[in-house]
Length: 209
Ligand SMILES: C[S@@+](CC[C@H](N)C(=O)[O-])C[C@H]1O[C@@H](n2cnc3c(N)ncnc32)[C@H](O)[C@@H]1O
Ligand SMILES: Nc1nc2[nH]cc(C(=O)O)c2c(=O)[nH]1
Ligand code: SF4
Ligand SMILES: [Mg+2]
Image 1 (cartoon, protein in one colour):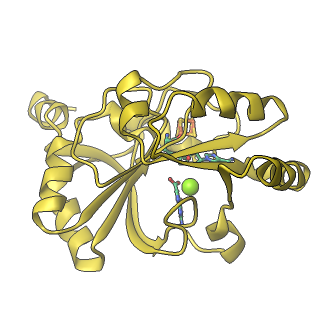
Image 2: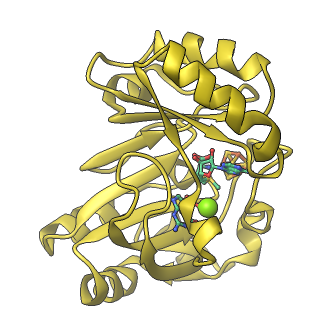
């Protein structure tokens, strides 16, 4: 990457873009809502079950002008979901300010492991044991979404729920490859502990992006 491009990426005026698509939010609080997804490359958290490992190496995803991403998003939807990869590895200020200036709501899917940059209308925090969220992200999260891969993740879920703000919505989501085993346990858990809700990766059942 030349130094000019590097500068633009460092300042958030360009971002390593993996893909963009208009679809239905499949998970969590806004399930069922149409939104424009912007997937930014780069992640070093290393979840062994990650469903987008192709996103991890940011060098594979071309630096793209933020204002062009915003123009396309605006033409499709008044909600943009910024995901990755781990979007908070990059400076989100320019992207989110430009979206909001065009009256597009800014939603993020994040592990919370990096500084919270940008201006967000909705923060979905999905903490990972390998690289825990920073304190400020717990404070700002609107939604906590814990992935349940095995039984020990229920304990992790409660530890994480103790750290978020009191208005944060709590979700348990089965890890996709293990969902047949873990979904019945999540159902029982939510009935026993109704502060939690179940989140299902509905887009995968619907065969949409
Ligand atoms: C691919 S991640 C990208 C955003 C960010 N790195 C994060 O982990 O929140 C988007 C969402 O998918 C969830 N996820 C990833 N792989 C999954 C899987 N195999 N089963 C269920 N959820 C998964 C993550 O926990 C996160 O909530
Ligand atoms: N439809 C749809 N909903 C989603 N919610 C979170 C996703 C993500 O990968 O961040 C995702 C995704 O990839 N597709
Ligand atoms: S933090 Fe998110 S993108 Fe990174 S490996 Fe984990 S699930 Fe995948
Ligand atoms: Mg996904």
